Amino acid sequence: DPKIIQKPKYLVAVTGSEKILICEQYLGHNAMYWYRQSAKKPLEFMFSYSYQKLMDNQTASSRFQPQSSKKNHLDLQITALKPDDSATYFCASSQQENTEVFFGKGTRLTVV
Amino acid sequence: QQKVQQSPESLIVPEGGMASLNCTSSDRNVDYFWWYRQHSGKSPKMLMSIFSNGEKEEGRFTVHLNKASLHTSLHIRDSQPSDSALYLCAASSVSGSFNKLTFGAGTRLAVCP
Image (tube, rainbow over all chains, first blue to last red; front, side, top):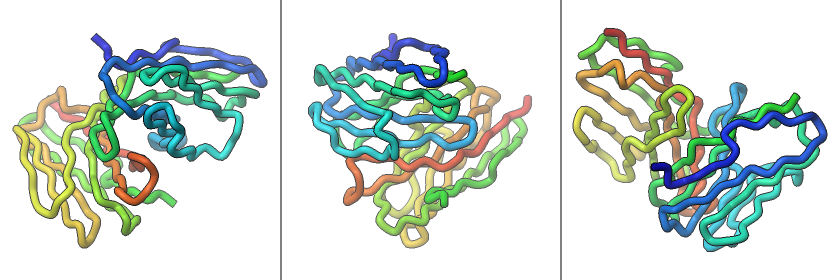
């Protein structure tokens, strides 16, 4: 029974288009994150949110925009998609800082 | 430059054998180390964490930490085919970005029956 739900599981997008990756967690955690993993790079931190407040943004591009409508909800909007954005995007959460980070099953994005 | 270096890149051990994985951080501000396991096509799941110098054991898994050298190692005894996976080491800092985990590239372990 997954406690961090990511939708969709797979996504194919056309270069230049825009997509939204959905994430909801039911662990009662206060912090949520986005990470990205591709064949070219290790698992890489993108954003952290605590109590719906953006804590850190490590992405160089403004094409990636997290959206938090509720405490347990953190979506990721990606605009002007490029083939290089192809990766598996993991949503994650933790109770608070310096505690275990739990990962969702991921959304595998392919940009063609 | 990768701040968390893992070695070896890949490792093959026989069933029942011992697997030893290494991880070093080049960031002097690191306070915590985390070991995650990721089976093929799945999400990473935390195995063990270590914050203090010394050793910590949980079942077949033992983790060591030397804070002076920022080196941690994970040892798996009595390895099973189900242990075959990508093992990821991550580091975080109390003074750094909010709970940001910096991952290494991983060690791919194969346990052969």
